[in-house]
Image 1 (tube, rainbow, N blue to C red):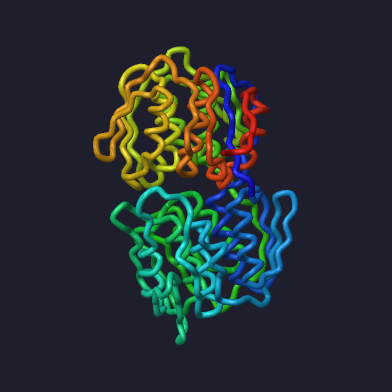
Image 2: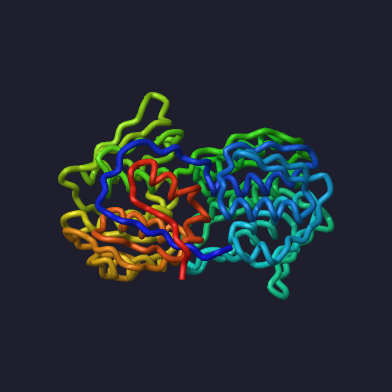
Length: 425
C-alpha cells in the first residue's frame, strides 16, 4: 500500500450533513464471533476500513467462507483452523478477539501477540486471566498465545477489572468463549460500553443466553451450540464525536445522520458546556451542531463508559487549543496517550503536560504545518486542527486514520472542507 498524507487547507466553514458509518469497535468482535457457528451469518453496516479488511482476511485464512459487498459481510465458518496467521495479526491489535471464539468452538487457539496503535501499555493479561478461569491452559511461546482446553470450558466467576478500569475487548473476548462453556459464567467488572452490548445482542441472536450486557455484571448460561444470524452494527460513536468536534472547531452548522445520540451523551454534554448548540431529532439518529460564536474552554477526565471516552481525548485537545481560557484534559485509561500534543504544539498550540494531564491555554489561531500521526485518534485530532489553522497542514502517516474512519476525506469534502490526499514521503 502506498504511503499517503492528507493535505488540509484551513479557514473554510463547514456546512452540510455527514452519514455516520457502522462502528469499527463493534464490527471487529462481531465478525470474530461468526467463527462460533458453522452456519451462515450476515453482518450489515460493516465500515470499509483497513482494520475490518484485515479481520475479513483473518476469517478467510482461518478457513471461513467470506463474501463482502456494500457494507455487508456474509460468513460461513463450516471448517476452520485454530491458528491465526502472524502476517495479518501483527497489523491489528483487535485481532486478538478471535481467541475467544476459537477457544470456545474448537477448544484451542494459537494467535500471535497483536499489533496496532502505539499508545502505551495495552496488555492482554485480563483476556488470558478470563480464559484461565474458564479452564483453559495458557502459554505464551515464540511470540504466540497458545490456548487449550482439552477437558472443555466450564463456567466461572471472572473479574475483568484492571488497573485502568475494565477492558472492552477483553470483556467481549471472554464473553465469546463463555457462551459455549458448560454452566454459568459471571463476568464482574465488565465493560459497559455500547460495543459490548452490540456484541451481546448478536450473540443472543445466535442462540446465546446473556443477561446484563451494558452493566458491570454479565451473566452467561452456556449453550451446546450457536446458529447463524443477521445483525446491523451500531453507529460509530467515535466517528460521530469526531465530526461533532469538526463542526465545533470549523463549522457553522453540521448535521450527523444515522448516529446514536444516547451513545454520545458525554461528548454532547461537554461540547454544550463549551457553548456549542447541539440538537437531535425525535429518533436520536440525526444530530446537528451549531458552533459557538464565543466558545469556552473546559475540563475533561477520560474514564470508562458512560464517562468521557478516551478515544475522544485527542480531538478535544485540538478543540481546546483555540478555545479562550485554560482547559485541562486528564487521561485515566491510557496515561501515555498524548503523542498528538507535540504535533499540536508545532501548529502553535500552547500545551504543557503535568503527568497524565494536558494543560491547554487557548490561542487565537493555529498555523498549518507538516505533522506526523502516531495513532488513530491522534491523526483525527491533527486533521481537526488543520481545519481551523491558517495555511496548509500535511498530516503524514494517513494509514492510521484509515484504520478507523471510513472515507474521511470524502465526508469532509461533502461538508465544505478543503482536503486532498497526496502521496506521502
